[in-house]
Every structure is written in structure tokens, then in C-alpha cells.
Amino acid sequence: MTGQTLLELENFLPYRLSVLSNTVSLAIAREYEDRFQLSITEWRVVAVLGRYDGLSAREVAERTAMDKVAVSRAVAALMKDGRVRRATAAHDKRQSVLSLTAKGRKVHAEVAPLALQHEQRLLAHLDAEEQSWLARILEKLLQAEQELARRGA
Amino acid sequence: MTGQTLLELENFLPYRLSVLSNTVSLAIAREYEDRFQLSITEWRVVAVLGRYDGLSAREVAERTAMDKVAVSRAVAALMKDGRVRRATAAHDKRQSVLSLTAKGRKVHAEVAPLALQHEQRLLAHLDAEEQSWLARILEKLLQAEQELARRGA
DNA sequence: CCGTTATAGTTTCATCTGAAACCATTTGCA
DNA sequence: TGCAAATGGTTTCAGATGAAACTATAACGG
Image (tube, rainbow over all chains, first blue to last red; front, side, top):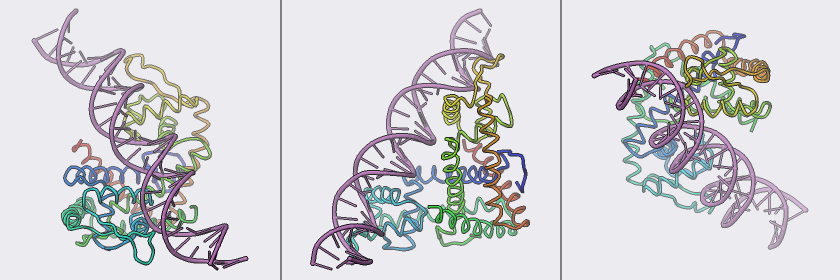
């Protein structure tokens, strides 16, 4: 990986990131879908609303790295299932105020521990030192790349 | 990240992996598309054929972590653009024997350095020690997760 | 050998996704 | 004020994607 000149897909960092991320996400997605009829995008919305109640759609988009179209669709699906409630902001009638219903909170309470379990399962392959390097490295890369993406956009 | 009990999406490992991977892939995909009319899946096929000429579609799928449908479509598109040539295996008429045309080799020769540049740009955010930890950690996680996925499938 | 089963690859269909167009409301400023 | 531009959010359309059905060929077991 470190500065080779010959391109081997198997060792190409963006490719490896993509494969790892897809493998992990797919496994999680399947379980959420099977057990809760919840897609990953819906889960992200539920996760942030469980933590920060009353966000607008734009705020949800920011915190989930989803675009506004995806948020709009996820919210629509969640409302149809009675898991999310939408009100209109008093000070700005364009903005929505989103919150979990009792049903939505129940889903959150059930899925959150499951999510943490998945994370632990993944981290279990690493020792403590590796775990802390990973956290640090991901943080750096995310910051730098998201900064770049923002500029590029 | 390391064993928290409260779920914060921003610190959730699968989420962070997904965001990082998507951010990086999207940037690369845009450039390949703009400059070479080449999608990421097509690029993967070109990359492995550039290195291992004469693979079958199944072998390409294995080496690119793509499913056979995606490979079939990518190959069809590449053939339409005259970048890939397909023959039938002499010993097994079901199998294809895929290789790059001169045009395909040209694309490979142009895109490969670009890909490596992208990788370097990413790695530039890390010092040497971090880079080597990242390589090691990714290797471990990929091995473990792909093993799991295979079993699960 | 011959019929069943497995494998390589393609096509079809239904769903997902992103970009652009769109509607409603608010903001900024002449 | 009032009108152009910006913002929040939804809808539409077109292309991407995955699962399952399908075709063709090969392998295997009786």
C-alpha cells in the first residue's frame, strides 16, 4: 500500500476501504432489514433523532452524511411506518421538526445495542493499540477528505 | 469508538468507514467519468485485466469483489467501447477469456498512475507510522470480515 | 451413455439512487 | 415595501444495482 508504483487492485487503498465498508454495511443492512424492516438510511435517521430530537431534515442530512433527497425519502418511509413524526417549525414554515414516536423510540432502543454489538464484533479483530490507531487514522482521513469534498462541491 | 455504550452515529465505526469510503470513491469516480468515460466498476475490470490478462468473468469477479452480474455489465460496456475483447475458452465453452484491446491498454496506462496519485493524496494525510498501521489494520479487518461474509453467504 | 445437478454468464424485473426540476417560504436589498 | 435570490424540502426522471429466472455447457453418478 505504502507508495508502490505498480497498481495492484487488491492493495489499492480506496478499493480496500470500499470492500471493507461494503462487506460490513451489507451484513448490518441485512440484519436490520430482516429483524426490523429498517433500511440503513432509515436507521441513520432514527439514530440521530434518538440522540437529537427535533432536528430539521437539513440537520439530519448533515449529521448522517446523506443528501436531502435520501433524507426526504427515509423520513417519508419512517412516517408511513409510524416511527417518525413531522411538524412544521414555528419560526420558518419551510423547515420541518422531526422526532421519533413511541414506536420509533422502541426501534431505536432495540437497534442501538445491536449496532454497538456489530461494532464490537469488528473491533474484536484488533488489539487495543490497533483500535486506538484506527480511531485516530479514520478521524484524520475523514476530516481531510470531507474538507476536500466540501471545497470541490 | 472503543467500546462506548452510547450510540453516536458520528463515532460509529461502520458509519465512519462508509462515509470515508464513499467520499473517496465518489471523488475518484467523478474524475474517471469526466476524463475517460469510465465507471468505477469498469475501472476495476480494466485494472485486473491490465495485470492478469485472459481471466474469465468469474475470476474477474473474484479479484474485484464484484458479483457476476456487475462484471457482465461492465464487460459489455467495455466491449462496446472497444476496450475489452472476449473469446471463449477452448476447454470450456461456458467460460470467457477476457483481455484488454490496445485501446483498453491505453486506458489502463493512463488511469493507473492517476489512481496511484489518488492513493498518495489520501496517504499524505498520515505519517509513515500511521500508514503502516492502517495497512496492517485494514488487512486484518478485511480478512476477518470477508471470511465471515463467505460463511454467512 | 443418459439424465440430474452444478457452473458460467446474461437477461429481466423491481428497487434504489442522484441530479435536476419543482414548489413554498424566507431573506436580502434596491 | 416588493422583487430577485436563496433556502428547505419534495417529486420526477433516468441510470445503477441486486435477486431471481434463464440459457448454455460441463461434470457426475448410476
